[in-house]
Length: 271
Image (tube, rainbow, N blue to C red; front, side, top):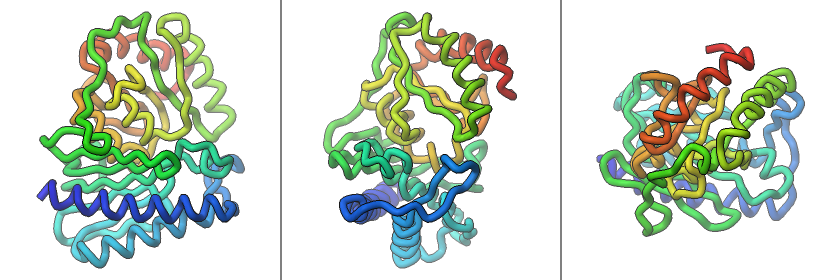
């Protein structure tokens, strides 16, 4: 079944990617703001999610749907599609070529703490990259199998992160990053959690850690990183969540996690 779900996620992801790329070329219009004035949603976000929802309803009418821009819909099959129609909307708004369509099929309740991710696809249409993974089937960029970087010393680790739309929270996250900068090679802030997790899978980042992610931000990317050999989750044995989503090779994660935890607590970020 994971293979079937992957084929569906990939096909619809590519179609939705072509749609948002076309809309980007035509010009982007902001439809609304959400949690803050900086947290925008474009008409293309809504159009992409509507398109994905409709295509899934045609192919898998008994499945649930959990997307960023519309109401969640439960299903009767035990499968839910977790969708971010444009991850990296601000990049999309500014025509920075780091935005993606993210589609994952999960089994169980639409909660990262309890679901089992079965298949995921992340498409960056701006540069034509397609990341995929299925449970137990490995992770791929196109036809190339992916593997996380191993044997990386902490001082040589390139770490990805992101920041909240809330200015107050960004200041706290800035303290967190300031404490980390002197202990690793450098920090990268790309602006798309899905692509950050795929970058760990592809060896473009050694680790990734971010607070404040929603399930649709990481559902597909987390599976892709895991299938490439990363350990993905929150602090300790917790699943990835709004508190923390952390991905790295297990050896690097073991070294980096206690540092991140103490920096997190020292910056006054809730645990």
